[in-house]
Image (cartoon, one colour):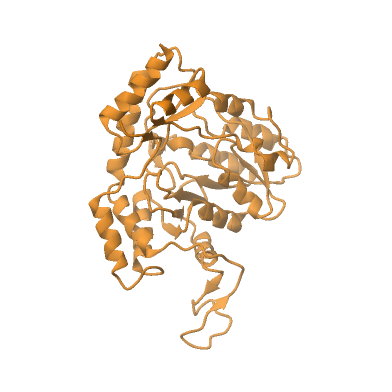
Length: 382
């Protein structure tokens, strides 16, 4: 059997045709496909605005630039990719980690509240919750907490397009819809639900933030006649603040539009794979964490906490199954240790890291491949 990765893009002939059409068009970048992708994505997510950017990290950076001031304290989770925290550091803010909830591996709202209750100087300004692995954080509860302390929210939804939680009114609230977060970010890396090669998106319902990010995305330059300080003619533009080149190309947007048209099918397939895993591992003695199927989960990752994780990881690789570890706790990275963090600061996150394993899950995973993964894991423990 060919090697089985933990994640992989799913490219169809439709995708290829759309990219070829873009390559033959008048625009390879800064053309109409980008706005088309933004409008389609906003409609899919349920937000008022969407801004396409070069990658998920750029989306986080631009979001932080609009909200973080130097010296601001911002809370986030240690179980995430480093970019969720780094975006705060890019802007001169201070990252403060709070431990995770052992049931869902996301930021523990009770731990966040404990930290905020000890803040007598009001230095905390924001929260960056992460919809880790595709689990939709209950942003209704985080919004209440944020409002109580006057904080903004950037939702890192890179793992969770199509994911949702059920609110206090028993309604489904989708990740990135802008109902509770000030800004939400998504990634179009090949292992994500929608693949553009590279790419990202910011969604919001806040028109002021939307316009600011549009400007920051392109060097801080505007050609809007209503915003110009001077106007020398139709060619004239002004750089009004220090911005960045974080644009997406029309080639990537064309692929994104094609992928987006099948997003629900891909999500359905991920959930079917997750259900199969959950059925197979339910009640197994080697499973240390929860393995129940979770309604509303977008299943970018399917994670098991297991005994002898390192040996199982090596065993699976020897059998051509390239399971992965997500993630090394960010606060244990040398950079963050240099800022004062240390091991044992986040005991739940660190315990999770010692036992977690991400199993293969992507729309192209066949039934026989998944059965091989399941049988290999069971045989290891037997």
